[in-house]
Image (cartoon, rainbow, N blue to C red; front, side, top):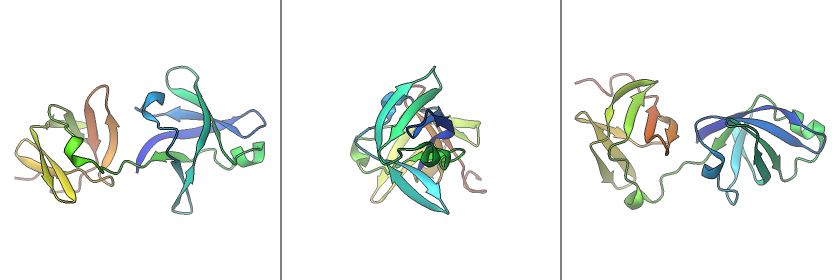
Length: 156
């Protein structure tokens, strides 16, 4: 799961929320697919019924089945996640993308290694698995990907 934003506050009395967006833009959110919000460690799917930009980093969002102010208030402060499973590895090409680990740039993607069930990128002679648990942010426009890699993965 990839964090795409955080519910900042409720918006109106009909269950709308104000979503603070991370690096993804509204065009990156597929309205046919659910977003997820964690409750007690479980990611619960929510389908978006409407969304509109509010400035460059916020959006007013209305979810199906969130119809009251009380429903919306239960979401405030929670992170909104997008399922970022890499299903079509053959179409994925991150060559030339900037790669960072916890915000520190470590290099650019030299090439992809499409091992069955475990796609990896080669950066500075290191293979980094493209696993959703390791990716903290992905920006298509800036061609940047940030990881939270385990200690020792980049050691020589």
